[in-house]
Length: 339
Image 1: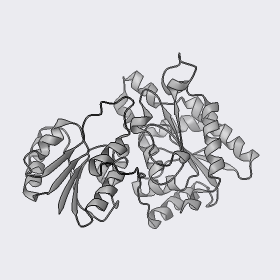
Image 2 (image 1 turned 180 degrees about the horizontal axis):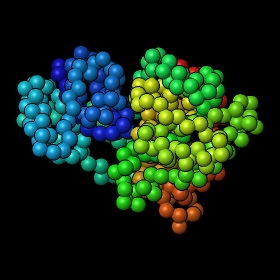
Image 3 (image 1 turned 30 degrees about the horizontal axis):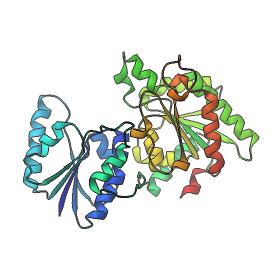
């Protein structure tokens, strides 16, 4: 049996499809699966499962991409798939497969309020009535060794208890001029700095110290440096070479991860690291961290009394510290204990 799955998205979008992909493998154990995705999707799902036989990249925009999309459409038609699963609601993806001659299972637009989680909707498309299963991303021992080397270079020992924070958000440069959207994705630099100081103080009062770390992309370095300065030395800034496999291992190593609604939040959930997620302007029932509710805390700006403060800034540092303390109390060991 030949199966095509289509999801063209960013990091978090791809992570949220993993329960459905696992269900697809279970329902069709002998299937030969091809995935159509974005360049980012190809990186995120690299090594996800050997039963993904091939990955085809959906072209971007521009005249050259028009010809590439036509070629992709012909490849789909020539492949003679038996079933196609569209984890997409945009009509252009249905048009991509409409002449494939296969049975198409397409995700419908979500009319409900509050919405069902995207991961659940994808799972139900593959296996109606199935019990929820967690998101997951595999982590290799080689990647763990590279992560350990990055931490060692920063003076972080193998047994130190780490809390990761992610002060940026994906495609931040594309949000220039979109003030409201930025407010809903960005927690203030001063708040990140204060959080690092309070977490360090919490660790000093407990049985084991806490080291707060932030890994940033090259384009986020100025933001990371500002947060580090605001922390008065209580945050360790990491700027290693890009390596998504190693990045997964770095997050897996952490005892806790704090992030706004962005891709690394989903990566943390997928590698089993407890998450404190900060939301504003979006419903976490649709796209929040997915998995064990005992390993996550979702804080919404809309739940704060300070309703005059826009976006994530409405979420107080005290509330984030409280959520961190709850999760750290439940998972007191280092990230290595999760393996």
